[in-house]
Length: 461
Image (cartoon, rainbow, N blue to C red; front, side, top):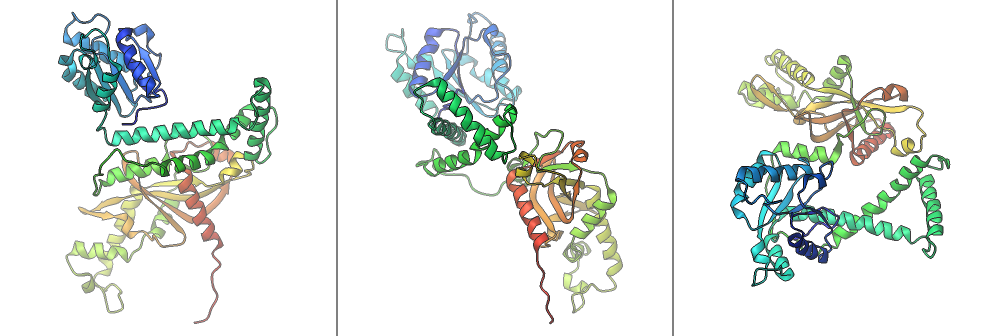
């Protein structure tokens, strides 16, 4: 079991002499802890959203004579003051003598939408034979036993610990650039180091008075090193907490959720930033991009299935649709296009290079248009997968994996022929619906570059 190494372990016990032995064991394992007695006036003003494990005494502050409802109400109010409901999964180890309240406590946690895994560590198991003092060895042994089989949650903790170690390594390495025999001199010289890192990141376009920009640009320089250090630590992992992984397909909605988390950032703000995706209203542009993006030929098979005939029966020898089916197919093709249009969102994407933005070299905003295409549409009771009918191999199109936006599944379709530049002030007035993360933005920029630079070949055949 990996325990969190960056201050995300909390001990809640109204009796310090019972909480302290647990803190000592955690400290010996290099786990820093936050301690609360449960007194309301001692709790943080805002709940934390990065808690991973809580050791909780179920009966706090002289509540032994109270009824179960009062005890559980007090406990959940303490938890709500400490842990935000958006915290994500965490473990609650019940450090208690009172297991009669456990089921009721689990039910309240579920009602409050906490993603908590509840384990029981009885205090009596951790005391010496006389029952008067705590045995640190017993605490560690029983704690290891309880935390042994947490499986996938263990991987999340391993990931957080790797990130913590990577960040610590970077601090240690860069701090060595200047000898530390004189702390005042070290502070002065390190400021020069950070200033020069910032100037390198910003392309030399920083002045001494731009303190905030110096800070931001200097920290940006650590990102490449941080990623390299993290990758190296992952390669060095020598064992897995899981004996095996469940295999098989996952639901398409979960796939889209995964892609959205990997490729998109929804914590957007007004203004311009490379990768920002803005919704725009332009019916004619939307119609043209959609109509140019759909293969008529691919829809023939859908049409033949709906008609209940073999595809070959609808085609002549030269693979052209027979005259008897043409009018009906044209109406079907138009209906498909219109249905896709009615369920799509026209967007424009800011695709300027990030370095131009960070170094303040942008003169105009570089924009390319596209649309969020629904993953599937319903036509006369038949579900049509739009991806199968998009011109995916066309050089002028970019089609993303399935993503989720406002509870609906889409693919981002970008038409490189609608590439233009706009005044920065005009873009700054818009609010993005989300931002493309760096990897997918670079992929789009690379394919746009290839589309622009394709040479073409002149020949006679």
